[in-house]
Length: 125
Image (tube, rainbow, N blue to C red; front, side, top):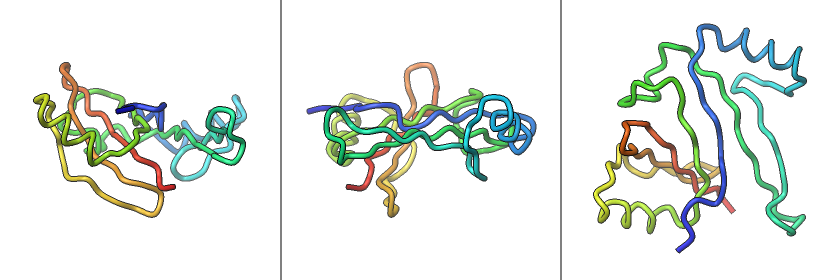
């Protein structure tokens, strides 16, 4: 079973997310919005399958990264999230929450061996 297929997003804490988004827009040309910036690309050789990677600065006091105390969280794109979560449970991996579904895909959070919270995302087709 194919597990991680790519990086879905990079999330990090900062004192002033709005100012950080503006700085990256001004100095590095990121096309930012209220959530950060989205980088679009095509999956492999198939120019009909568009993918994306999200870049998001979060307020330094966010609780979204908990129970991890780290300043960052990585979102990994995966295939077949339900099956993957079952396999991870059998392997003793800590699953933080239940799978949630949205228009843009399914999500769940896990903890790695050093306490980093990881977001797993199966994009909607």
